[in-house]
Image 1 (cartoon, rainbow, N blue to C red):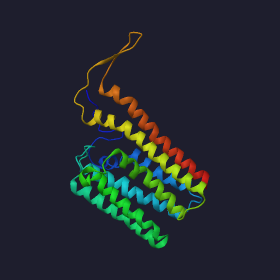
Image 2: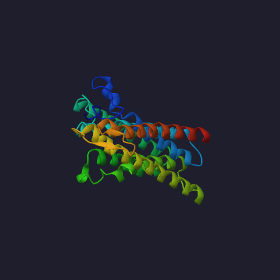
Image 3: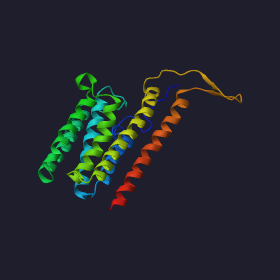
Image 4: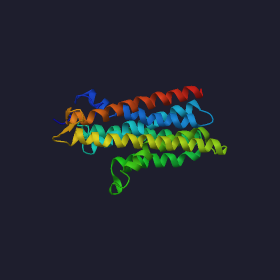
Length: 246
């Protein structure tokens, strides 16, 4: 039998559980770790800017991007109405952009390009605009990992420093890109097993004669375990780095 839940973190459909499921909790937390990594790479963490960046990306990605994704084909099979999903997406994206605009006036006008690019990616990726040109694995890793880290780093620096510190920041951005690329490599086959597979048949024979029946659950288990482990590990690591910087 195929996997019944569309994701390892999805709850039983209905009511408040749908609101939790649609947030993709492990991946929303992972997205916010990229903000933490970017801030930790800066010469100094400005607490007010750091918190504002976390809130902005939670609204833009954690809520808006994920509700738009659910609106497009119901991959998580929630029972939330289209009106609810659209309202959550619009209000949260407006809130994120509002925080960005405020930052342009209060912190630096150099944040304007980040606000524009961030809003663009939320719409272009999740609504598959431009024929889905931006709905690819590369743009996922860039928009939801590298971009948050780069934004957070710039918010806390606002200028180029020494060559070594700038290179360190770019290396952190590249590392965030790589981690989410790995996450995508693991999540793509397990999503196919959970959401699109009708049946799986076959067996694996080991040298000692052991026969392992191949089922959707058997194939999905190591992928899910890896995704669970990565999702909490990056959160703990990012928090640790931020604490060290303080």
